[in-house]
Image (cartoon, one colour):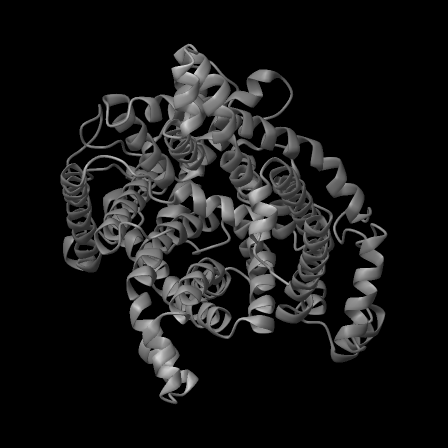
Length: 306
Length: 305
């Protein structure tokens, strides 16, 4: 276990360095901060002054080192737009995003667990086919369109739910469902295949032979073991889930990091964009690490297998 | 040092084929699924033909403004007229014509971006799988970094710096999409590398390039085809999201994404402006997915993707 943890930790460190390089490269290699900062009619000496001011006349690795050593201390520079520290802006917007993500995760499980288990227990039945149809349709559904359709139906027509905003539990329903619908198809498939696999093992037969009630067999013996791939993939999908949260937030005007990022992109406020991207990536990496540890702990085959 | 994540192992195991019904029944099921795939392919063909024939099929120019007839409802609704079958948008442009032309942009971006990303991904995947060791470790780490980043955020950040345009969008979606191919191709290459015909080729003194491109690559064509097909759908969704945010295809050029974005404002009274382009995206990605799944079943039912 220790060796496994150490290996994953090294991997983690490498990925974090990679992410910081990527975030740095997006602004400094692909783009040019000065062109973005100065008006188009700025003169040559103005450009030169800004290059010096921002330290852009130094070699790239020196610039990266400066960026990285500051970023470690939570200093991503000040927002070009509001003149407050970018880090503070992003951190303030973090809770709504995380709440939304977890609400979406919960909603996905609420949809996919019963459907997946039912589909697995009654294979090739009407329920199973229905689940397949829902899964295929769900994977093709553009999230933002689903969100807009929900708004048109439940907010505009039926006037049951608030169309956008944040605050009460009613505000959570549509965004959480939208995000949940994004993750539910793959989760449902995994639950289904996991339960099918487990139900054909010997220990299930043993449990049945002992006379354990069928629902107990499913709930206690099958479900637990079917959970391993589900937990792993959910952890792995967390990045995608945050990506889905980006889409969901923009549709429902959710006051989270994603709306902040999109607004900052529109305002060309790059320190904020950079900070948001790095922090979101860090959260994903951390969660992936925890998931790897948990799964490695539950299932020794994995930490030995690789 | 291995760069394989524990999660991948579990994912692969979860996707592994499950021993199920008898062979006869399974082949019947395969045929049944293939039928869906064929139907989907036909629908897709129809969509492609319609967008290709846009100048002849579209009743109006997609950018022709007719402010007097703005926000006209579809023909079957109260107040709708048959000269605009799907109604008109906020400045009186014919929605049907814009839908037909909009599909061109989505399909063009989908196909070109996938062509770019599959080329990069296949080359890197081949290199990682064939040479192993340090090269594999470097490429796998790159893949992990890229896959950790939510694709949407990466695309947003790059577009923000480069500026929104059709070319930039193809560039971003093409360059950022490679890790998925690389991961699949790497795994397949690793398995092929140990096979007799490759070992024999090496014993005969073939160059690495000849083994990789002449012996290994031809065996990967079906895997590449399946992944690429499924990815086209993902790219179309992503492209329309970026356009929806106003960071993709710029108006007045019609694209399903920016039509949806513009229509969102008028959702209260004129739902059709947002609803139809979204439905077009949905149907297109749905048939592409169905076709991709059928393709996978047909080419290799045991493929782990």
